[in-house]
Image 1: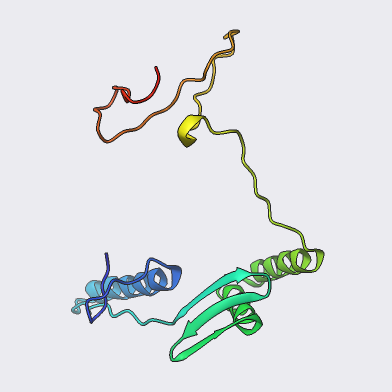
Image 2 (image 1 turned 45 degrees about the vertical axis):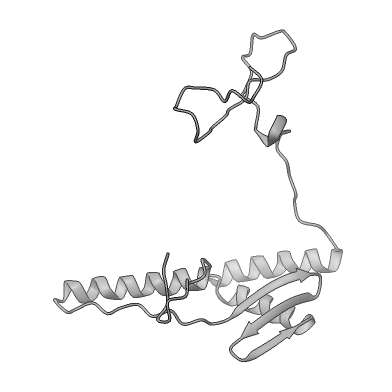
Length: 153
């Protein structure tokens, strides 16, 4: 976990990763030139989150605001950091269409989950009996190859 100058954890979000990546690249170039590397210092640009249609919250430096202004700022920042005009245009048009048509995004569940939220194992093509699907179980309490004794066989 990365920490800032004051010892606080750096948030695991895109802006922190972008800063760290840029700094790592600069340090690699310094190393190739025979220069000393520099320590990384995280600069907090703020936080934004959408909480619904036309609603968001934002904290940027000393400013804290919400509502439509924060929602517009969130949209602008996300579009700004996309790479390329084509990507920005496509995302903007998709967002505009969804906004004006009140369309909901795709919320797909590809197949039902089995008991306890575990996906069932695929059945063999020639299996004709209707039985409970076998479960993939991964437990830290058991060694590989052992099944979890708490689950039905």
